[in-house]
Every structure is written in C-alpha cells, then in structure tokens.
Image (cartoon, rainbow, N blue to C red; front, side, top):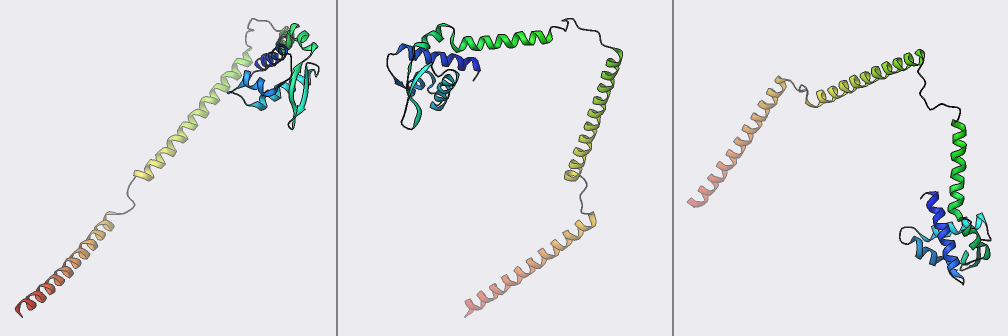
Length: 198
C-alpha cells in the first residue's frame, strides 16, 4: 500500500470521527473503510500512526486489553483536516523531495554530452568481452549437452559377442525347460494310462 493511500485513509478516519458526536469503537473504522481486503490490525496501526503524529487529533479510551478501544474527534481534528490533513502533509513532503532532487541535478545539462574516445573504446572492449563470454558459455552448454546425449543414447556398453553369448545361454535354458516339461508331461501320461488300464 502506498503512503499516499495511507494518508487518504488517515484523513477518512479523522473525517469519520468528526462526523460523529460520540465515542466509537475502532472496529467501526475497520468495517467502514478496510473490510474485507485488510485486517483490523492495519486499522489499529493507522490509528497509532495518527496518534504518533499528534495525540491531540483523537481522544481515545483504552479497554478490552487494547490501548485504543474507543475514540472520538477533538476540536483540533477539524482544524487539522481544514488545513489539508495527512494528504497535504504527504504532498508537501513529496514536493520537498522533488525540489531537493532538482537542485541536485541542476548542475547537469539536459543535452547529451559527446562521449570521449576512451569511453567509446572501453565500451567497445567491454562489448567484446561480453560476446566472448557468451560464446564460451554457448560452447560449454553444447559440450555438456552432447556429453549427456552421448551417455544416454550413445554406443552400447555391451559388445556383440557378449550379446550372442547371452542369447545362446537363454536358448539353452529355454530348451532345458522345454525338455523338463516334456518329461513331466510324459510321466503324467504314463501315470494316466496305467490308471486307466487297471
């Protein structure tokens, strides 16, 4: 939240206090101006800032474990608002800063000064170094990505002979399993034939 917006809210709090003739809770300010986008603590913080600036702007009563539970306007509140309030204070502060910054920059001319040859050559040298650095980074990236791709999709780590040997071993195991199953099947057939003949 900008300081200008805070200044506007402080002025609205004071205007609301002036519009009432009695004491009211800080909750009313929260409900009126800040709900639902901000929390109640923010309203309390703004009230504290008002009182820190000038404790005669609001008359406060503490209670319910809170420093400022209820508040009301004072005779000074209306005068303060008529003189511009917090918005005017903010604007005056901004104008002071603008004047100060103008005085700081007053010795400089608005026209561009021509660059000296040494400045141009240093800029050219700097540009060359940046280009060289970018080329080195690009080359490094290229080498790294090539290495990653090569390890993932490059030549297989197993030779052709090893693959053939593995294939032969798998074929032999398969043949042995087939023969074992054939023997078991023959044994079961013989058992059934012997059973059926009896």
